[in-house]
Length: 148
Image (tube, rainbow, N blue to C red; front, side, top):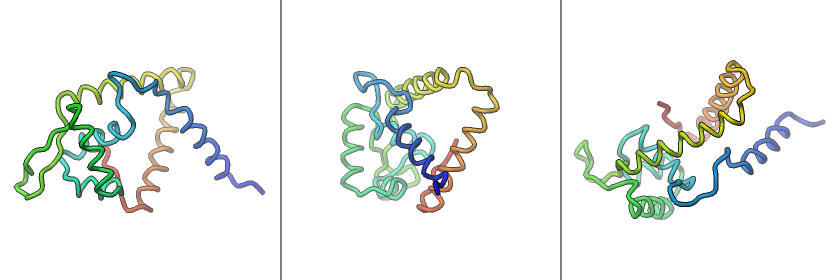
């Protein structure tokens, strides 16, 4: 007897293969880790390495590599804690904001093409199911993701 979760697993695998319609990474595009890092900082505001580690469930060395790479190309900068804490925090730069906006618009444009023949109600329902799926994962992992 096949459970529907097998269908979900298979479709998830296929979705990851498509990369949500993202083009090849080259000049002017963000890699996945930079996109997620910038998206989180945009929604939550400046974050320390420790806060990023807790948010992503990744070790410090992984986040150090990601933030160093993002700093090197000018996407984030380190600032004193705006709330007066000891740890320095990462803040998205104007360049990071611009590249994140461009990448997001490109992704949304690709999704619009993929779903061009979908009724708005179906798109809204699909978004609601994805949100529900993600919030269930976040609840189980203990790492909720803030939403705008």
